[in-house]
Image (tube, rainbow, N blue to C red; front, side, top):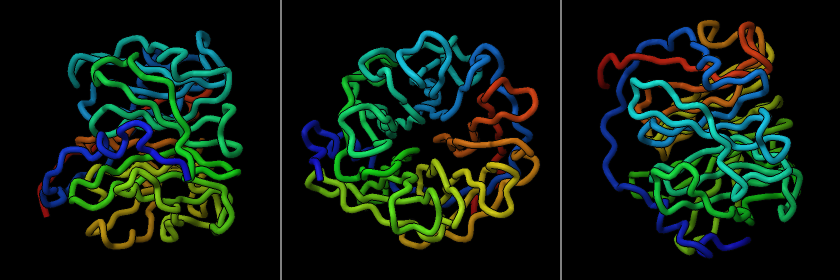
Length: 304
C-alpha cells in the first residue's frame, strides 16, 4: 500500500475540528433546474462537485478544448447568488489524453480526488489526488499521484471524502467492481490511518446491492449519503439516499429520491453541498444535451 505522506495529505485533510450541531430537518427536494447553456454544453457534462464555500464548481466533460477523452473543468462565481463563469479546463497538470472522471474537493479546499485510467495505476480505473497550496486558485492543482493501496486491478471510481469533524479517522467512500461485493459496482469505504496509509477498503454492505451502485456523496457531517443506482425501484439510473443517526452506526435502507428529482432517463453523479441544501447531479433527461448538470434544492424546516 503506497504511503500518502509523500506529501502532507494526512495533515492537510485533517480539517476543521468542530462538534457537529444537531442534524437539521428539511423540506422535500425541489424539481431540478438545468444549469443552462452557460455551464452545460452539447457534449457530456457530469460528475459535479463544489468547493466548501460553494464558489467553485468542478465537473468532467468531453467538450472541445480538453486534452483527452474526458477532462476536468471548473467554473466559479463571486457569491451563491451570482451566475457561474464560463467553464475552463483545469489544465495539463491534471488532465491527460486519458479519462479524468468525477472529482471531489476536500473540505479544506487543498485536495482534488478523481478517477482516471491513465498509465501508472493499478487497474482499469484508479483514484488519484492532486494538491494545491492556494485554495482560491482554481488552476493551481499540482501533478496528481495515485492513491496506491486503495486501488485494485478493477474499477475504482467516484470518490467522496469525509473529513470526520468528530475526531475519528477521515474516510474515503467510493465505488468499485472488485470481487467480494454483491453486485457489479458496490460501495466501499477506506479509513485514512495516522501513518498516512489507507487501511484496506471495506464493503459498505447496507449501501450495496446486486445491481450497480455508483459515486457516493457523503454529507459533511457523515449522516446522509447520496449515490446513483439501477437497483430495483429505479428507472434507468436513479438517485438514492441513505441516512444514519450517528457516524458509528450503520446506514439505514436506501430510499429512492422519487419522481420529483428522478426521471425516466439516467440521473447520476449526485453531489451534496456543504450547506446541505443543494444537490447537484447529471442527467440525460429531456431538455438535456447528451448529459447536463442539474440542481435541486431543499429548505431547512427546523432541528431535531
